[in-house]
Length: 394
Image 1 (tube, rainbow, N blue to C red):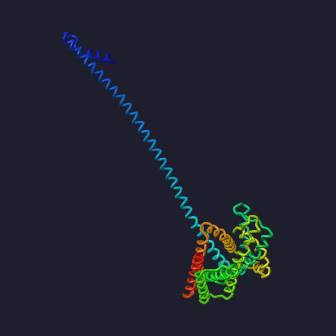
Image 2: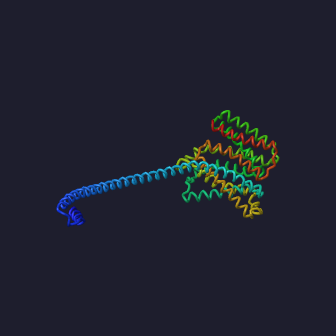
Image 3: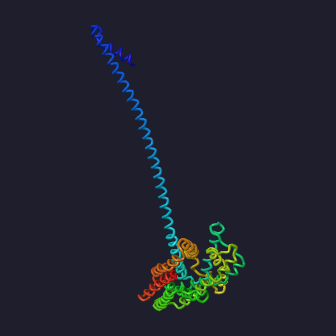
């Protein structure tokens, strides 16, 4: 490279110059060659340095991009996990609310539909309606058990013998409830059912020696006052309906006490040593079918059902079937709600649920009300809530 550079410089000068000129040119040529070599070396060094610097820069850029990508991926994973936890937390919080709403809607809807069947369609065969509803419930539970959706205890004669007293009271409770709902408006049925709590508390005191605190007795005293005043001020008072409701209160309290009395013996009669709610639903509904058929024959309801015009209406069967399914759904939704919350919340919500049921019954069926009767109903609802809170704190 230096020789080419030298020849190129010599060719650029005039060859006819004197000798002195030649010597000076030679010196200049040496100086220029030296400078040129230094320049080339500097350029080479700069080129190498620039190459090294560029390589380092590229390495640094790659490291930075790698770290940035890792940080971005880490941030995205963290955001996904946070979002997943947030969604799971929201779902868990909403489940108790959904289960409580399902329980309240099922309970309210069943009472309203039974009232429509008995009063709206003027169906005068309460035992036959109970038979149909219990058959629907039995069929659904059996299908769920066969498909593996629910687990039920295998029936044995020992378990059936233990459960028959409970089932007899259960049938009486359902039939009396049907007839009382036929003659009394929904709001009054709801208020009069508070008497059941009083009878149950008295029965627990004498049978199981369970004492209640003063708050509970105060709330029950308020229930008595509200029931009496509501009955006196009821503009649609019906003696037959109130008689059936009193019988219903006695049988409902008896069912609760009898169930508690035989539960230990019933558990011993099963292979698993326990008796879940689903098994009790199947036992009550299945065992009630032969008893209901006997009652229908004794009361002569079969003759009425065969000749009644209402049974020829398709909409009647739709409503009757829906009420039967809702009766079963109350069992499942109550278990679901109780599992998601606890006995305290379940008891309180059950008392509060009487308020929308009463309001719906008054509005849908256009019940005639006086100011005093409305006040008595509201007072009874307040007493029911107070009773639930007192039981919780006891």
